[in-house]
Amino acid sequence: DAKTTQPPSMDCAEGRAANLPCNHSTISGNEYVYWYRQIHSQGPQYIIHGLKNNETNEMASLIITEDRKSSTLILPHATLRDTAVYYCIVRVAGSEDNTNAGKSTFGDGTTLTVKP
Amino acid sequence: GAVVSQHPSWVICKSGTSVKIECRSLDFQATTMFWYRQFPKQSLMLMATSNEGSKATYEQGVEKDKFLINHASLTLSTLTVTSAHPEDSSFYICSASKGAGDLSNQPQHFGDGTRLSIL
Image (cartoon, rainbow over all chains, first blue to last red; front, top):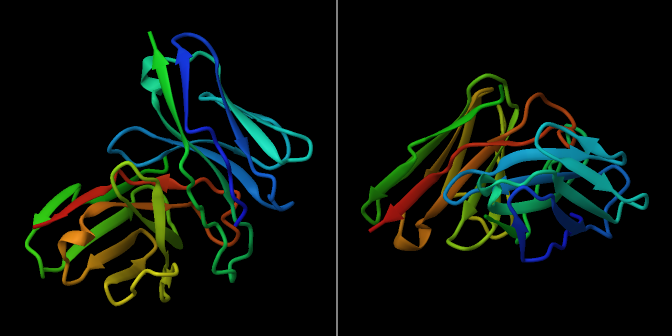
């Protein structure tokens, strides 16, 4: 599985954009980049994912570099409720008979603290 | 949509007993579910991949006889921790993706986890 590297922690002021970086230099051409977040004592929450193109949804934007070796998750207007651990994951590609298909290996993530 | 429910959310039991945790996809079918374990202040660790109608695939170092997985229907997978001991105390989380085939383009939807405490 391609590994990801994220800074262990980041702070962001409430109302400002939070930009969370992730390095995935060994990513393969057919592997997707996913972002999840986990608030204390809960299961992870899906945020967004992409393959090559930048993506945007109601929660965030995902910017993937042209060489796909890194990406940035952008929370446009961070709120106190966005304080969480954010995980960047490269998801294994494959077909139905590939036992590794769809597996997600979690790294240590980035603890984002949004401050008033 | 895409809700995954785990039950129970919290369980305390004596050492030596077996504990069953259920993972249900409430509004979609899932041929594959994943089971994770998370210790305090650590990341999620993948334990096994649960496949509907076939045997689970376990990650290296995870004892298949200790952690029994059954995926009998497209909406239910169970994890049974057999002969549980205090070191098995952890936060167990399941996830499921919609559909079948190549799941790499399908988000995982996670349950809220089960906190297991073995006395």
